[in-house]
Image (cartoon, rainbow, N blue to C red; front, top):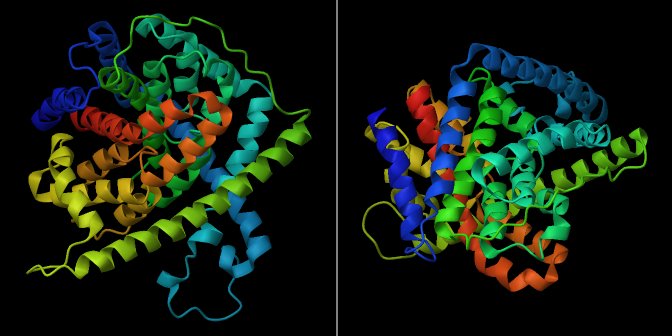
Length: 411
């Protein structure tokens, strides 16, 4: 616990050291955001009624996974979880990621679109946005964008506040980017929960809480790294349904989910291949000992950061490599690697902390998605987006690690 208590101010210090203006520190916003994160973490991690509510959500997702398995078994047969037409001699190799785990993204996307059309998600986003606007003094557009990042992706979130992107200050724009990097979309919750289900009980509850309480951390660190100038745009953001009917929402959502699934598969293939190529190049360096790897280099750099979240030092090196995998490739591969770890390599408490610390889109692949999406939405801010977006990986990573600190303190 003492490490995690030390980790919170150290992470804020790291953000301040990389600030664009270290003379201007947003003290009021930082204090309210830190208090908001602590209260959210305390409520969701310690209050039994809220924990039971999250467990209910966990059970609902398990049912959703079973429903998805019915669809994949019908479409893909034994590759998707259906009965095998022959004797399986190596069942440990029969799980195919693309056919068994990833298709739930399509179902989640379709259901998310349906809930959006029925105005359930917009209502939740509106309440959270107003709450953060009143408590932290941030603009309504930033409050709405940051709240929506818990449910939708880093490209869909700016779409909600597209009319305000032109008039946002650089600080506000960076807050929206950082929140996108520090959270995961609702369409991904079931996928990550399914990966971690065997090693972490109630994994969906933890992932949902992690994404939720990372929002104030991302706002805090973004304001420290790119301090606001003091002006705000307190404008209401209307969120009309983009769908014409319930059926249109289901069909469009399924199509969006299919494109997202294809993008996930493509990114996994490309980035695993690129990391392999870089590792092969590093292995040509005439160095004694074990050959250098990209994840190994980043892992050594991030080991102290992992230790600050509450990971014991003897496990911090492995935790640093998991954080490096999350940044260099993505959090999906990092979760897959953590789930595949042999028992004892990471303690149960460390696995929980890492579940929180890795729960965000802060990686190089997401950077390309963010730049491409936001530049298309607001071409006149392309120069600002190109300058701020790379820094959002750092702010997003620090935000999820700060969430990991609170998990280390309270769990």
